[in-house]
Amino acid sequence: MKKNLVSINDFTKDEILHVLEMAKKFEENPDRSILNGKLIAVLFYEPSTRTRLSFESAIQRLGGRIVGFSEATNTSIRKGESLGDTIRTINQYTDMIIMRNPYDGSARYASEISTVPFINAGDGSNQHPTQCLLDLYSILQTQNTLDNLNITFVGDLKYGRTVHSLVKAMTDFNTTFHLVSPLELKLPSAVKYYIKKNKLPYYQYEKIEDAIPLSDIIYMTRIQQERFVDPVEYEKVKNSYILHANMLTNVKPNLKVLHPLPRVNEIDPSVDSTPYAYYFQQAKNGLYVRQALICYMLGIEV
Image (cartoon, rainbow, N blue to C red; front, side):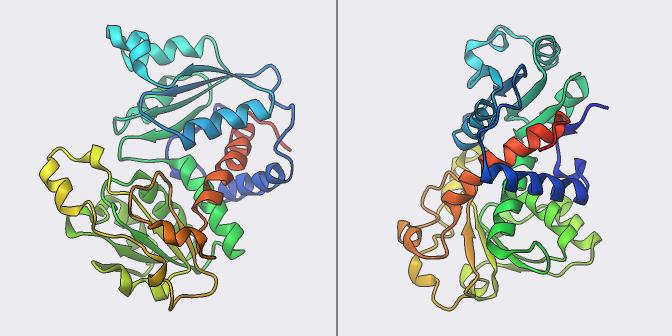
């Protein structure tokens, strides 16, 4: 049966843990010729650095080949071709489709049309399940567990698709959630539902300083200008939270700061040299996790 990953909810807890175990093996040895003969479509309708390049690196380091595009302007979409027809066409050529699209729900629609395994690399402000998997791997690597942690999410909790996916995933691990945001960017009720459904504690703050001492993980996010229709509303909240090294004095020794990147100014460069910074290693972990995910969905065990 064809496997898709559109939402992190498409994987069971056991499947998530299995992919993370596979990722450990790829971290030990990322160069393997196990995708020889496989052709994978990487379709990015929206700009990306880490997600696209880590997927392409993952495929090439495993011996696979890539077709696709990094912007839609050079494709038949510019002529008016529908998303459905694009997917139906690319199905004919490839063994898997990986897609990023700026519209919420586009990934679910495309996955239902696709006849090959489909991976959502981000759809608008909705979901980003592969980022979620590498975030989980990063948390596991730094905390040696996913269970019973205090995780603080900071910044754009309304439009932040990485936050939406990770909150949903962490409800399987008895997490205590600390939610720091401007009132305008609070976590949507549809995502908060998963916390309430699992009867997990959560606390909401407007000041990051209130949550820092409680945190095992601080997950910083960028205030996303591209998600705002009204530029005035963006200007009101754009510099709401900036984490500086001198704010990390009364913290747990195991604290790690994560960020899905790119950062703008929400993490000051002074944090980079502290023992708490983990966001660049987090980005590197994307290679191993995406190698594991591609292999798992193609039925290739390592």
